Image (cartoon, rainbow, N blue to C red; front, side):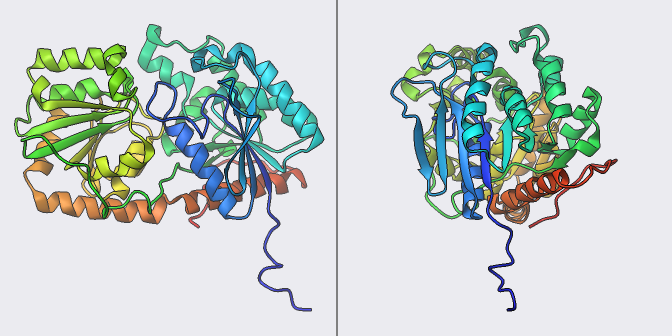
Length: 425
């Protein structure tokens, strides 16, 4: 009998995604809830769309959470009891990773997944013993590297002292690292992790949810132009740089979205710091804080902007530039990390040095002065988001890495001397 197309497909995989602090169910915009939560939720859904069975393991941080929740067909979320069932800062979770790993070992011993994929260094640490003992292939995505955080934050870095050596250990002991951008591969090499242990698989965006057509949030201000900064309210995201740049952009308002709900901004230290910065700069009347947004509100707010600002001091990848690009909005971003891959300078937006309000203002001025250029960049941004960063493509590349690792377990490992880059789906 001639095999049918259906029968020739590889069998579906049982996939364990481990994300100790970043639940796919969490409300976004708070201090420890951001791009990783989005990445895990969307990757899980896109893998399920490809026929795989996905379980996301995350720490139980509330007493009322059930042991297991269905996120969507093909994806369930397991709330792992590790530490007190209450919210904890992610930097306080390391003492609970042994308990987290013990729960993984017990569950996987009874029903091992075909492949485990850990997200963030502590998830990798929790997975090493369980995956090693049970010979489960393990891939790892860092999302952020301690060596980069230490370089930029110095004494202000609140990460556990063991973070950097633990990250190196995870990178050397897992089967493969899935780096989200080219810049990360260079950082891994500086950590002593060979480039050949990494595949470059970017984060993604949903081009149906984030698209140019659709409702836009109302513009209540009297200013001709709207600039938007979206993301967590933490100093490294560079909102203070955007506020300083606004002093050179008299016809624009700046909308800052992220952080706690609007009603609790008065208790948020970073929101208070930024408000004071705006007051001292004389632009408080042109800066609006929206607070954290519900997921369905994000595309509408992006569509309301003339230019989206992403001036982070450092950015391991950066989901917001992709979401803005998918909505057809030009981006002005700092030339750091993953933004060097996603934003094409002079084509989909402009790249500027980090921490430079004057350079940021100059780049924004170029775009505000030329509606045709904004439209051209926005259209090119949409094309780039569709062509490279849809979650279907990211899931296909991730699956190729999974299957490559699984196949490698069945044959003698060959040394690799280059970064493996999955071909576009």
